Length: 428
Ligand SMILES: Cc1cc2nc3c(=O)[nH]c(=O)nc-3n(C[C@H](O)[C@H](O)[C@H](O)COP(=O)(O)O)c2cc1C
Image (cartoon, rainbow, N blue to C red):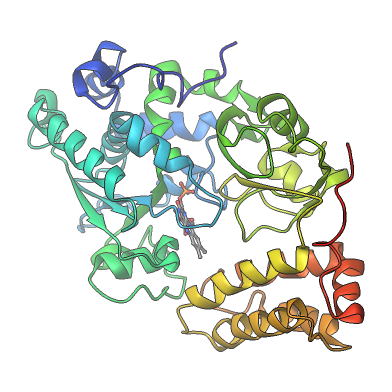
């Protein structure tokens, strides 16, 4: 079975052009659905397919859509989360740049299912080229009658507005994204109420990740059973893994959910650099707890990675070999979250800053006895207590680095220097 779904056409030249996309069967799912399927039938199909959100949390997509109240008298909005701001994550960019019509068709189908007549595509400010490509593709879709009034004579109206963010990580969090869209600072909102009932402009709103929505045309075309048959039970479909760091071939790899991590790293990425040994793997973006080399046989799906003590998150896989100083890696991550905390919650605003400060002194050879206990205590106080999970996202990796590489952190403090940087490479 060919397990490439989202990337199967990426080798085709000029795929960004609507004519090329159509010649490969593009927009056929939309034409059929508008004629033959009711919105509820699409929601049922997506529920049955087992599709889970690709933005991070893995929430079942059909279930989320089912939370939108019917006939509330308020407009329903759909927001395409193209913020892609988690360090180590670059898979949505591939779709935005190379196959934008796949995403647009998925967005139109999803909007039809949700009774939405205005969708927003929120894209990070740094994605200048992807934003231009998507804007052009939306204009092409409008010219062809896939967007606008009375789409393909169905009576269904929809437009998509592209909104460029200003470069804040927090605006990828769904409620901060809504604040930003409304023209305010990206400060997350307290939940409940959840966006499905009170979202953009106080109306029912669904927020979905780019990769999630790009799957929809394929599910409508091939059916729920086909999609559910790919991957492993409870984790249907494929996943786009963005692999960076110390492997021979970095890049985005589409593989069925449940593929062993070792297969991704060795068969697809060519293993770690010659003469080096695998040391650690971040499985789902920088906020997810780190895995050690002896966990390389874990399967890459939401549930298996959770059982291994981490999260599949955004599937941004960061590979570190034995040349990596884990103190320095933790320091770099802590700096990012300290800079990106929105500052609303004390635990996050102060905690991220303290983590960074303590790691900075350990890395600089000025660590103190008790610093590791202090770091772990801080992490424990940062989790589960804030408006949004950025505080958890900052604490979880640091906690895992300190716990799993305790001896290395301890040696940095005892010897007041980096014990890794000067070590000779070990042949594999
Ligand atoms: C701090 C933070 C940053 C996030 N950044 C992103 C992001 O860049 N892109 C994304 O799709 N989801 C991001 N999320 C998850 C979104 O809040 C939301 O769960 C997701 O867009 C829902 O889409 P899905 O159900 O299709 O996964 C982030 C969450 C948090 C807490």
